[in-house]
Length: 326
Image (cartoon, rainbow, N blue to C red; front, side, top):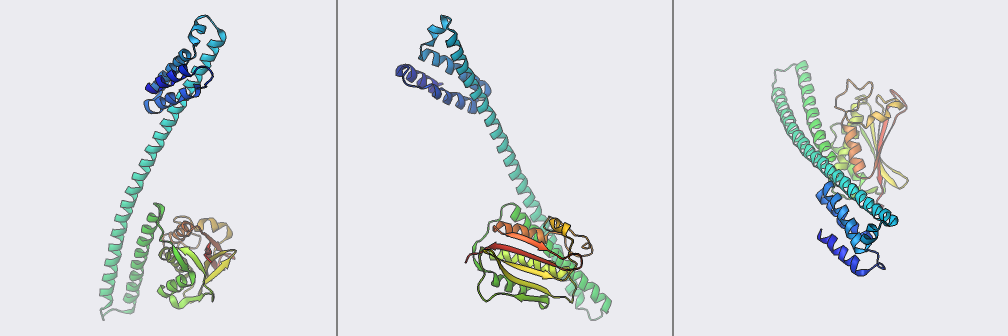
């Protein structure tokens, strides 16, 4: 109200040559934004009356001037509409803030549940591995029993991998903070291949020249490891899996190829979905999270993922590409 009084006095003192009418919208919109609809409408009426006094429209209005009635009515309508719009915008802003806070609370709660679940999952996997190691040391085991224990040990590793994937996905979906440095994809490929449990099946091909990109080496290694695990899992045990550093149109990346079950062209859209599973994959281990996690990591780096196959039983090729840093 004080601001309205100041504008009204300034308008009266300045005379008709100085246009101050738009300034009346300032206290009207402010009152509507902070005080609500009723306060905004009251300020619109007060602004109209103040403008009438400041410009000496009162005498004309009392004498029945039609033009004056129309002018002041139009100004009142303008101020009322401004007040209503400001109120609506404030209501929408408050609603958006409330939804944002609710989403943040939900996200924090989800992260807490995921962390608790992953902790329990890892604890169970560690207990299974310890039990298997203890039983496997017995000299009285027959071949079938050792095979069952080996299978159980593999399941424990799968549980550990699932826990790792769930934790990584939750972290990325909540906003992954990447430790970006200059990396050579040849080093990433070499490290992942050396750490594979079936490294003897991998055919690693790297170029003579560096293939540099700006990336988080740990996260990018995780993405490639998922590709390699997927290829090894979905191809015959005696087959080879290729891992090659590639270049394409100002990008560098890695392609992983196998001679496994392959997929039909219409199934490409399902590959990188969360919990995505293909036909013929129901007997394979995994929860359908590996490729989805790779997609999240690569896209967080500003890159892209691709998959191709010549059809069922013809193997598959998975690759990711990142902008080249050299």
